[in-house]
Length: 71
Image 1 (cartoon, rainbow, N blue to C red):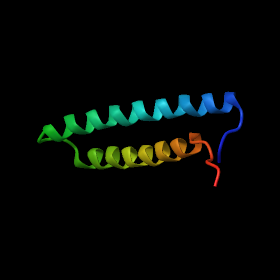
Image 2: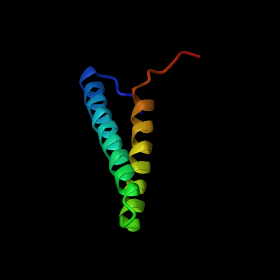
Image 3: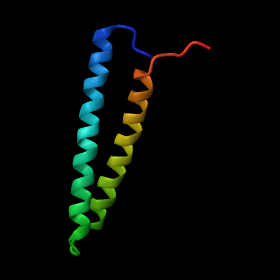
């Protein structure tokens, strides 16, 4: 999946930036929760799972935005 028009590339780049921001926010939230000894472990696991899903989405979008290289 490689976007061909500039509008689609811009939309994907914007989505990529949003996913990266959410990933950073989750990273900070997980770090704060892990400092709290009374933190809900299930919540931490859910946040970590969401963070992994975001990472996968980020990788997919980044590969979509990389132009095809001639062989």
